Image 1 (spheres, rainbow, N blue to C red):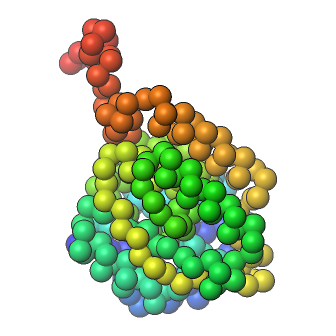
Image 2: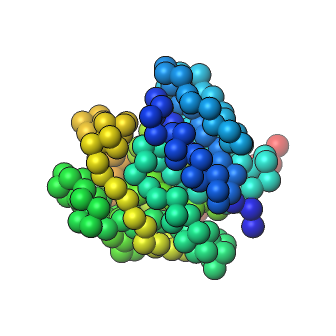
Length: 250
């Protein structure tokens, strides 16, 4: 197993250097610059990928996954660039992945202990409830960006959501294809600098996540699980074959 840390970044110039250096003590680091308009500090011994224009967190993650797969890594640990996560928790995620190589290891934050704003706590509780309805799996934190992705899964799973909604769609579809989900307690911090550096847009991003949640919820209610799993892997669904609509070899 070969790990790297992937850090999407957009104008996090006051925090990215410290986060990347601390993560580099544990494994190789890939920083994806999502069209930043401010100059980065030096990122010694890190791989820096640059995207043209700000395309959102989903595009940055997908670009990082593609690079990591080509570079021979098997697992990618994602971290936020704003300094919310503790790099000392990286060994916990790596240990969870080694114990279950197929699992998607998910950081689980204690929102009260870390002093998260009430709005963040309530939004996460609502998201966790919706995730349970959509997947049948109980998690206390479905929104944490501190995760360990098996690249084999990331390359197979078909997702369409953009920006911050990507992580939720990936999690739901991973559950639909029966990927093991490993909950890993992690620490986090909410302070004034971190909240200023956050690129989460409460109105636009919450609206996008709400629409995605509604769509996934409708699928969970009305579409058989086998079909949802097939769609998530880009496969033909049984009804196409039943009605003679299956694709024929070229």
